Image 1 (cartoon, rainbow, N blue to C red):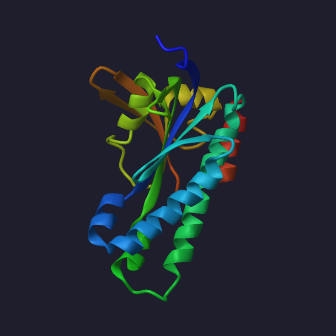
Image 2: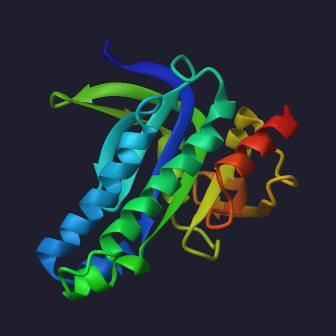
Image 3: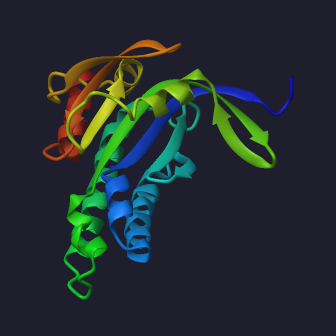
Length: 210
């Protein structure tokens, strides 16, 4: 076994643009890519630090927050609410620019953001000179992007993530779901709509659970 593989525990976060595929397929290539690039960059700047951007995966930002670097998980809900806030600010700014009437620019308001968070274990390794994380929990957080939850702007926390951040699911109005994936089993999840939920709401829910 290679000595450069290290096992750690921490948060695994995916911030994914809802409506991305329809937007990219149905709009002008240059402006469509520019719009989604600006939105993803805004989210990345807000998440890191304290999170570590692991990879940009087409329509999603994959970030990790190792327990050693993020010992207080209660800061995460407000951070994610802020990331959603900057996404919406950039979206409104670009949608308000009337200098271009192409379909990509007209369809900016159709985009949204969903955030999936899991707390688990992952192995850091270097493959072909590129750093990456791997393991069953990494697979799980990616699978969670495909779920039966309705809506396009929501925060989904697995049971392990909810416990780590100390949120009160009742105070934050979260809905409980159970999802199941082959080889990964059943996963309890808690979902909150991001549209009406702000930084104060998420922070207050964390405090109430402390």
